[in-house]
Amino acid sequence: MPVPTLVWEGGRPGHVRLIDQTRLPTEYVVLDVRTVDEMFDCIRRLVVRGAPAIGVAAGFGVLLGAQRLDERDRDDTLGRVKEIAAHLAKSRPTAVNLFWALDRMVARATRDHSANKPIVAGLFEEAHAIFEADKAICRKIGAYGAELLRDSMTVLTHCNAGGLATVDYGTALAPIYVAHDQGKKIAVFADETRPLLQGSRLTAWELQQSGIDVTLITDSMAARVMFEGRIDAVFVGADRIARNGDVANKIGTYGVAVLARQHGIPFYVCAPLSTFDAAIATGDQIPIEERGSEEVACGFGKRTAPEGVKIYNPAFDVTPARLVTGIVTEVGVIERPNPARVEAALRRGHVL
Ligand code: MRU
Image 1 (cartoon, protein in one colour):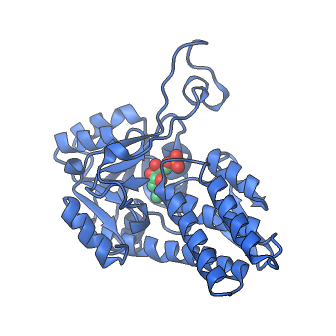
Image 2: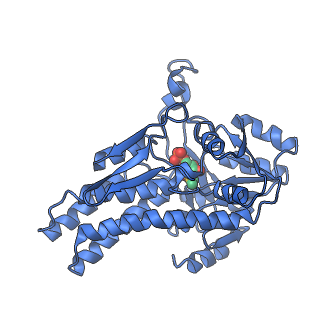
Image 3: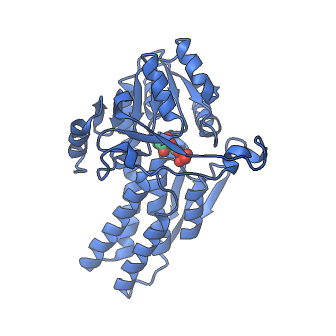
């Protein structure tokens, strides 16, 4: 069973219940989130994180605010929904699923407003549709990705693109879960993923919970394990993919892709079509989140750098499409991504 990353509790009104991912793996804490500001804070602080989960959280975040509105003044309701969405859009900049979900919520409210239909009821439906679709998409990515995995393979992954980053099986970990369910023996090397340690705190935790053979390494060990011939494939997630197939993902992913190419290891990205940004031609246009210096200098409360030293902390990097063997989506694998192949997949998924 995948972990219940976030769910809507109750009907209307209701609230969001989510796992506080900042507390894993030592504490399993479930939070009740009842306001837009609380949801904003959860996204910003990575209490809920991972591109698809951020999208679902944003949809529910709009609903949290909308369900408090008095719908008698419908123009005011629509205006307030737009304001809530604009506010949530400032929580994190890189994962495009955030903006995709917010746009969907605003579009739904705008449609229902024009059609004289109940606005909040429509938003309830839309947020739940985003949630349900994420589950189905994880399963499809898992099924396509599992075809790339043979019995006894070892996969290296970076960051966490598992159940905790979605509301079901995950993206990069979905093929591993599906292959495992199919009876294939798959082992995983998980990069620790400095500075916030999503690999050790989250990926190692969830794979261990699922009984999958997982070995934790620090990021700087990836080259060595590849050199030793221990890795058959790399599977990672994505936060935003440009029209040419360039992939933004957790800082360090680009280095892993370079290493994979050097060692002749296939490098797969697993992501839903909602992670593609059709408005962006190449990866250089993807906004990269920069986070606070204390994450590097004083991670988890222990100072490991001198006071006052200059620190640069980009949270994501961009892997050029030429290093990507394939992008596993819910409409199949985009082999050696390029603009034409990405466009064909987006058309197959009715995104374009
Ligand atoms: O900063 P985070 O933890 O939100 O970064 C997460 C990642 O980079 C994931 O690999 C990505 O969002 C894909 S999750 C399915």
